[in-house]
Image (cartoon, rainbow, N blue to C red):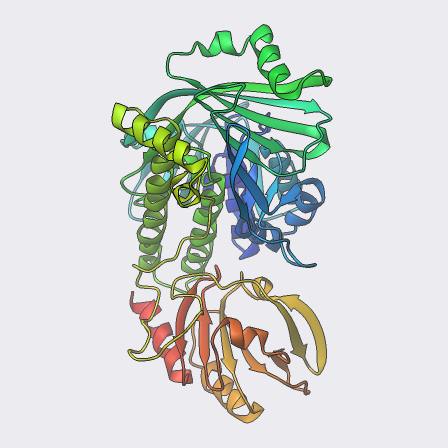
Amino acid sequence: MTKPLLPVVIVGAGPTGMTAALDLAHYGVPSLLLDEDHHLSDGSRALAYHSTALTVWEKFGAAEPMLKQGIGWSVRHTYRGEKRLYVQDFGQPSPGFLPRYINLPQADVERHLLERIEANPLIDLRWGHRVVSLSQNADETELEVETPQGRLNLRGQYLLACDGAHSTMRKLLQLDFPGQTFNDYFLIADIKAHLDLPQEPRFFFDHPTNPGKTVLIHPQPEGIWRIDWQIGASADPQLEASPEKMDQRIRALIGNAPYEIVWVSAYRFHQRLLARLKHGRVFFAGDAAHLVAPFGARGLNSAIQDVENLAWKLAWVLKGLAPARLLETYQAERWAAQAENQRVTIATMRFMAPNTAFLRFRRNLILWLSGFHEPARKWVDSGKMSTPFVYTDTPLLTPDIPGETWNNAPVLGARPPDLPLTVICNGQTRPTFLRRLFGSGFVALYFADQTAPAHEFSENLAEQIKFPFEFYPVISWKNNTSKAVLDADGSLSKALSARSGTLYLFRPDGHLALRRRSGEAQDIIEYDEMLHKI
């Protein structure tokens, strides 16, 4: 009997795979989610999540419990010894805005995602399913899977490999995973203790309790603290993780305060990136595709951006709303994003764990100068924090018209800053946020002094656009229009450097695709035509 052809098979039910299944379901696409294990992660592992990851999880109801449990923070401190060198202050979020970062152990993130998966009829999650072979042709992929009930053959139109650093899918396709491994070992402990410290991360170079090396302290919920020690290339990780050694390290930091060790792990950092993220009908995302050192929180955050980039494209291709060639842009956009993450984190690791005499001399000189010469502090690298990538080299944006200026507005390919909005629908107002307009189809914002041009604009689009999109006139007064964004105080106009007649077009993932000072319906029609000829 011929096995049914599934739209999408996802291998790996960690946070990347779970998010992929939920995001596809958000677009109405069913998936089969396989994992060879049968339990969630342990320990903190991935810990700090950027607001853009929370925005993705917010779409399907997973962000709210994470926000309630997690610790939001907007300030990060960097020290040399016990002298503070600088503070990264992202600003406290106003009510309704997402915090720039929250700290929440990966196991809890997975638990909240799993709750949403179990409530979603479009997702078939199967534990204890290990893929043992993979083949594909021009039309489908085929898997042979070991299950508790025996061998099983599965067919899928597309396959997402989200199965982590030791990816079976990568091995089955015999793909090289080029990169490097840093020699220095690091030791992590999650400890439960009452510490009289603000709920903010602290990074130390040359801490008195770990001379010549680094210490990172992160707060977690429920009185748990994560401590990362750099222990060097020649350390014996097993010895360093022994109860006696761990007690010495912890006591040196917290004194006589009672504590309980919750989780311990020792590891080396890897920097690796597949040459291609798309192989036929197989897509790689998260740790299966790229590995980076965790300083700057560029691991799981960038994995969620992989998923957000791919999910709407897969959904549209599967629904016949776009040609399959659209999927090639996943490689172009996300490989560039991950190459940038590699560049940033390799620079950080070279500063933290210099592996040549010159790099050690440079690092030590910068740290010494930074103690009394403030300009030197800009060269201190304790990890540049994760931010959304700007897609500049992609066919999915339309260049600006030469001569048009957009002072202080987001650049093409970027995400706009979040803003509070009021949406008018049939005369009724509803407060919301700009981020919540994205995530279904393209979003067109047309800034209008009068409603008549906006209605004419909308009518010209209604029957000619093939891709899903929402059209919002942006007006400065309340009226009985069927749908509009009220910008009474001009904050949206200011943030987007817009005036009457300005048109913005955003992709489903919120990245800016097109803008015009004197926008016309034809601009969007031509973009739609380009999308279908890509």
